[in-house]
Image (cartoon, rainbow, N blue to C red; front, side, top):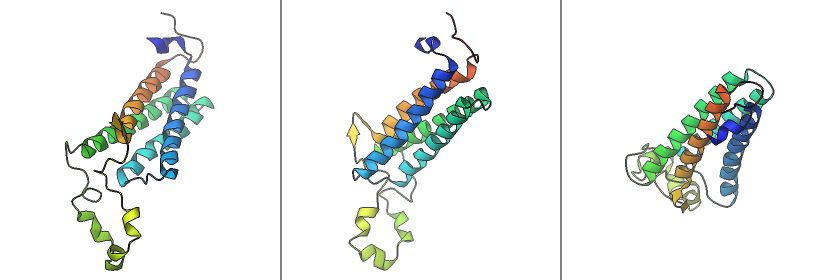
Length: 165
């Protein structure tokens, strides 16, 4: 496996930077005008946790345990991403609070619903706003799953040196 060539420290750094890149990318899309839905926001929290855990592992705080926990965070955001992608593709129902069923509109007052400004702030979880082969949620799922593999290898890696084939 190609990951066998890298030390635990390099794997930790790569995975941490990977989560920082994905989270940073989400904020760049938001700055570019792609407002996140509720499920998009849910996917960001495990990235933030993985970054914190990765920094702790790089600082020497129980590297195997923190890498394993960061891997769990990566699996959580991957699962959320795949679930969200399925909602976007109408493969299954999403949360009623953020899908096209309209049940989530009960949180708005009558004045809010009549306002022309609210349309820009309501983003439904089942709307695809950007797609390049996969939707943003789908890409998050795939890339986060890859990061989970890197975290798992880092957690199983000895603290020094490279693994020899």
